[in-house]
Length: 396
Image (tube, rainbow, N blue to C red; front, side, top):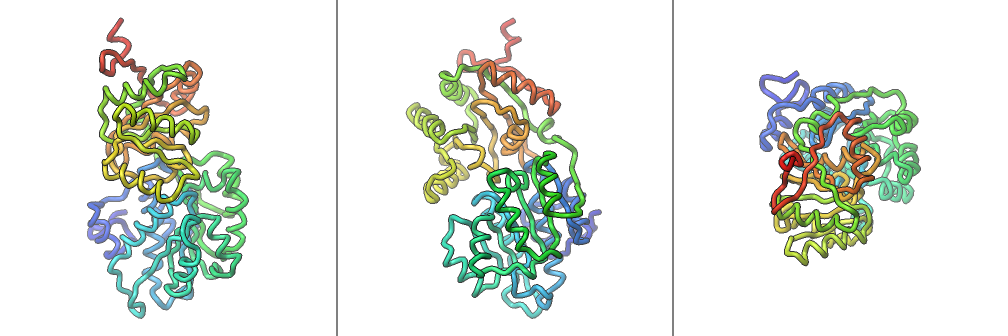
């Protein structure tokens, strides 16, 4: 599938050259599967692990088709590509990738190239409306709530939309977002190419996607390859009252460069952050409902390595793409294996290795054994002794 002079067959020289700026020369497994179908403008839903290149799997062929159609295409001057996501961070990351891929693009008859817009609920809606009116962005990355606002205010028209992408489709079809997602799809040009992707696609998610996407190809890469081969899975036992102390002891023993810790409730996140900082471990937290500036500050400091520990809820961490996270720690184990997959997927990205550490009580570890069996993983029990991380058999 790969051209001798490009990234993959059908992806032109301009986009291939842009990828070289990131030292990306060969497509991932899911990109090889998905890109030809989207270039052929087929509806598709696909599943692939976090960190396997899903974003470029749909952006590259979609943008290539837009570029090939040129400035005189029927949809020119309107929103042509809509990427829908559940979180501000993922919206923002996709906008950055679009701008990177289209930088310095020149199209005959379109001296300003192809413009994009970030339209999230956290942004100023008046500025977004002005950008739609003045810049006429061809590519919009947004969440469902803000999109419906703009459509209902008659400020955004989707009658000439050519592509709609549901990124993190499992989250967009979850009960709390399902009605908004379904309502949005009713506003979209019925002839638009429909694309949905996620790290997990349960039967419930597939059923809901089938109801709104219509006839759709389903594609998957090798299941859980990165989860099994690139991530070490460890378990540490702790009663609930001792979990934060065990986390602190683990951080002291492992000295990880960049650790993402998962906890459920905002109050728990704040407690973990306070105790870690009290003991001189640089930590900040993010959770749903916190202020935009405070959240951005925490993420920027974590990305830059200014603080080595970020504590987050599952929802707040959705779509986070932060380089060089070496360790994931989960404070308790969900019964849902998909939660485990999404948490673990924050490490071992772009071919790197990572460690997933589960700190749990007896009930948690029983759940972990079920996940271990379901996902065909090997989870190694560990104990902390004398400032070191040890295997139990060292004490037999």
